[in-house]
Length: 492
Image (cartoon, rainbow, N blue to C red; front, side, top):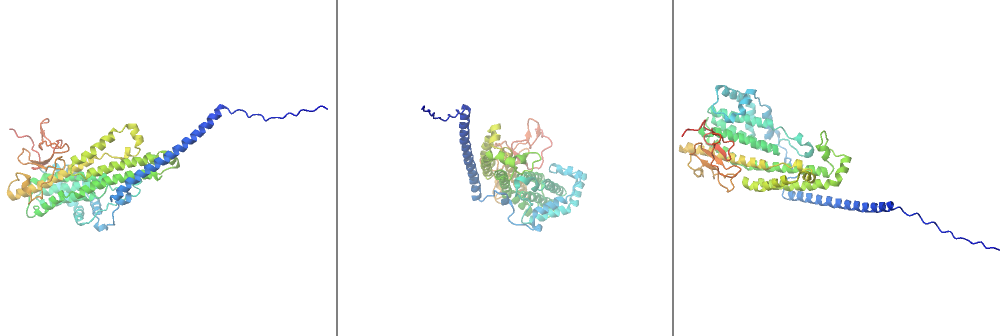
């Protein structure tokens, strides 16, 4: 019997995995590891960015400074009949100015001799705006000012919350023009009170805590000082209708009271810092769409698509917020310096560093600050210019009081202390803490500040190149003690 051989079958070996699939598996594993690494890196970056931003916020809060929108709300409601801002708004709304009068008051600070027609225009301006003048005058007895500005959701509704500043500026121009008119008609008592109204109006406006409002305040101050300059040299002081000594001394004190102006600047910078932080937090918390907010027709609301696109780089916005806060903190520190040279030593390196930032890379690294971080060096310089002008106006008024008492101007400003001034005001533009300069015997008698370059150029107003008098394009800031420049140079 033939035995049958049984063959044991072995399973066939699986076909070899193509090489390309091996690389795919390796790539997927590597990609997974990279993705996990990126997620971990993104988590750490987000954590670190948030930590640094929160640390900056905490330091500001610990110093007792405002940083959130609601921090800038008035501490309590002001009744309408005690609200100086509301009175100024009503005064501006009641203002009536014709086109001819508007043309005239545009140059009221440079008017020398008013023609009968111009005097009549200003007389009509005063008569038709009696209610406006009454509302303005009564604000001096009002304890506070609330312009209705609220900064909640500030990053979205900034343009909707600021009352128009143009009517307030026009109101102060009218007050200044009427003051010039009163002086020309011999009523210096009312002229001085009008100047005080102008300065008070600027102070009330500075309680609208924005950078643009502070710049308008500086412009109004400059206007008021230039008008005081026009009349001080022949100001009548004595019994009504002359200005009383008490009124002159009050005006001097108000010009030298710089605390409201300094607080206005500091608060304006703090509001800028708050807006910057508000935008960054809005993006970080998906409350504000960065792309839709800056796009034409955008609503400012974040979309799901934008959230997905922004998520990987969201820490970049928070880190940019840290940069802006630190920058603004230094600007605030500069505002607290005693003079412009000290402030400029802080501001100039900041601006130079910012200008040196490479274009394309800088825009990537600073997606918010590139369009939200203003150049504030000029604003701080304008502020110190204004301080110099106010101090010179106060000195000029003290010189006029001295002249009334002694029949001559003082030989040096030290003679004004202590009867007319507590001390000679320092020049806020001088690097050495020097006082305001005085040249009573010059061809054009002046008080002057050394200006932004800090160099004493003698307070000269003669332009040798142009062969004309010119005080506006000189390096020194000058206050004309005789009110006007000569028509032409007196021949030797």
